[in-house]
Length: 138
Image (cartoon, rainbow, N blue to C red; front, side, top):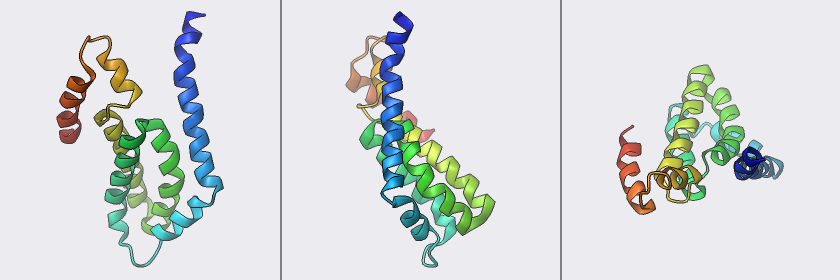
């Protein structure tokens, strides 16, 4: 029973993240962003950089790398393949993953940041200050 208690919050976070991602897709953002990404005015080589920045900002603001991935994957992955082929697609998927993890490590509202500071008996603000330079370099 203790194991189930420990997994309740992470499972609820994942369910909410998937729900948010589904809501974004259901409201029609998927075709909209795909059409923007495949527009002739946007150089496909810029997609990975733009996707990284968007994923990092969303993850930093929400504190959830999983939530960010569930939002950004349906929006950017399809359009990147259509616009730039398999090479741009692989770079864009990598940008989504790394941007989501970057924002998750760099924010004080992330569950992993909070749970990392607690057992180490480290102040949350001190942990965030030490994580940010690491996240920026790596």
